[in-house]
Length: 164
Image (cartoon, rainbow, N blue to C red; front, side, top):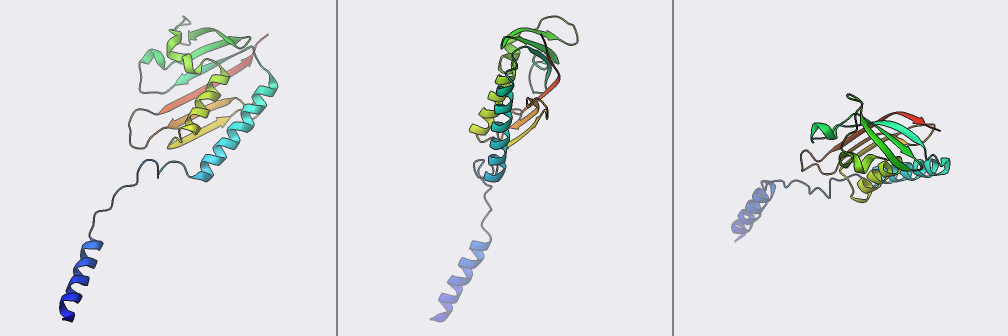
């Protein structure tokens, strides 16, 4: 009578140890709470400092290393006056570009919105560097999902100048 019980227990252990391992869902593998909290605090700190500076006339060079049309990559020079984008020109040709390609990135507040969106959506990976003096983002790297390809965002902001 003990032999069937031992065999059943042995079979259950054997089968239990040989079950396939299921990969974790994207939600489980998203940023750890500590990393997410740190990104949120750094974001809030720098956005508040940027807003306090009240800079409304400036220009910067933006490069978008995306899996998208070449015209949407840049680099482009974006000029903002009174908080509104006044021009977007190609660095290579010094000619205006289609503003729709850069609509999400054509002011510093909109760049902060991109970061906020990544935090809100719990992006799988978010790395942001900020200018230590003026607090605007200088590098934004977002991977929204480890399960998808080509949805990443890599933005570089350079040559920032306050203009009169």
